Amino acid sequence: MNGATVDDAREDARDARTEREHAGARAAAEAWEALFRAQVTLMRRLQADDIWGDLSMREYDVLFTLSRCPDGLRMRDLNAYVLLSQPSLSRLVDRLEAAGLVRRVVVPDDARGTTVTLTDAGAALQRELGRRHVRTIQRYVGAALDDDELATLRRLTDKLRAAQADIPD
Image (cartoon, rainbow, N blue to C red):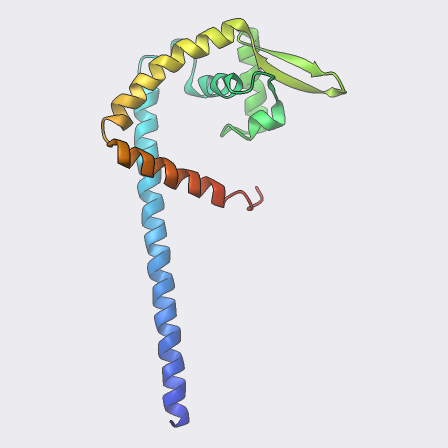
């Protein structure tokens, strides 16, 4: 084999590898775009539903998150679950507290820290809205996908979330 042939073979292999990488990147971008567009469409429908009463979906999201944490959450931990800046979350919690739906409790071993917990009224409202929300999710998601597709969607989204665990924010 002469030098030109070896160089040509290396270049062909490099070109094939680059083409596979581009195809993989293109497929990942298309899958992301489809997931993102589906999420945007569904969120718009859910927000437009007349189930929220005086709450916004973001406020409901905070109540829902706290409902899964009976001991409450510190603000920084709550912030990890919602898609809001820290100042926006603080203002939202202020509104929920003024409405009597959450309370802030000083952490016993850390006077600078506070934990946010649901009040009885907040828990009752979350359960009421949660039942309505589940029915609309069934209408928009459950009616569009069969049980196997729902299980696949869950498995894939869990896998995507788990793959991000090692990436710093």
